[in-house]
Length: 334
Image (cartoon, rainbow, N blue to C red; front, side, top):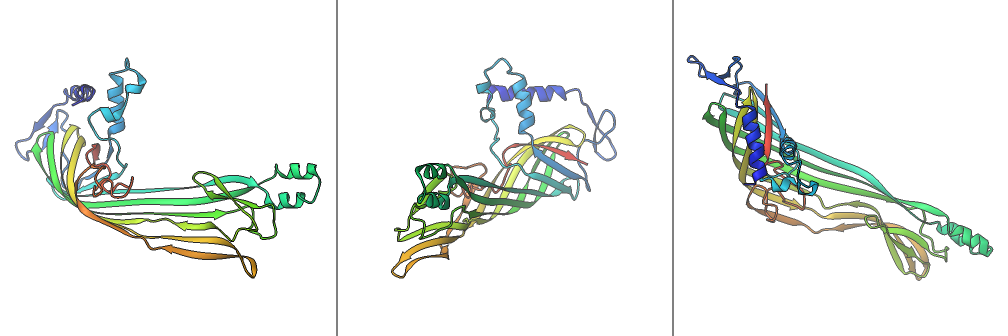
């Protein structure tokens, strides 16, 4: 295990070493020296989050004399490349709980690229050289607006046992998730068979690549909307982990799991604008294209096995299903 991680763990243990607990003879409830109960009990609710940022602060605090480039959490012996999820628990008894993990991640935005104003350039072609040079400087906007979502939900049952502050837990959970993405494009220049100087438009909003539609072209297309290939995921997972309660109702813990996942990826739908120069002359129209390519995956995997095509933690590209499993978690109970 990495030396820096051991140092950080020692700091945490030393910091809370002065906290004392006692067990009453009547109800066997673990309490600290002030009489506060340390462990959760029936009816308590637990909320948690990934504790990696907290550990980073402790680890970096003990190696201030090292180069900044060496301060990499991946070298600390724990997993930090996981989705942030809200973790919730409801304790049915002192040793059993139902639990849920959820993440709703969305993003949206737009790209705007400028291309030459085709109509102004065409009009200037009938004027002077100065008119033509001035028209070369005029621009119109091509714009892409997009939205993406990645939703994951896990519901499970947890059983616990342990001694005083150190508690082990195990159980199983059912998981469901999905992703989707859409893109809508608008263009500053209209397709036209009359503009002999050509019509520029962005054909790839990721790279900003530009295509020129000339009247002599037989067929040119550009996307108006794109429904990307989303996916739908199901999984069953068994887990086991440990928690240490360093303060009343506050714990730090880690878990790992093994599970079975199913993943379906559906096709893509395009709506695109078409310029076509046929025998009866040029015309512009819209067409819908359904790309009916589908994928299905299934298999068993341990957590955080992102190099496995069947991995629960990487079912489709960078889309995580089980989120922060295998990472350090900070839990609060009340």
